[in-house]
Image (cartoon, rainbow, N blue to C red; front, side, top):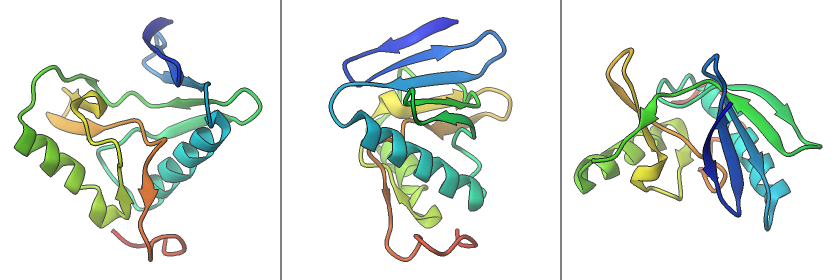
Length: 133
């Protein structure tokens, strides 16, 4: 596995088959883990096409495995970054960490994608409404 990120909050590794493993640690790790799982499950239910899919979750190890949503983006103007994060809201999610470090580029279809939902908020009215975008 290739280590992509190792911070006080999480360690992220990319497997050779393209899956992404994230292990949460630090303050509020269990809460951040649970929130990311909940948000990713919601986004899959509403068929959001520009986020990773949750493939595995391990609450005991605070570990998730997701699909790969592309490569890191090094340059993106502020207007485009804001527009990308605004695209989430019709799917019922506000990212709450809207920075370029949470944007990837999926070459397969030329799509910018969003990652890292541990701080995201499920918007009112979407908690029990699985058919909206």
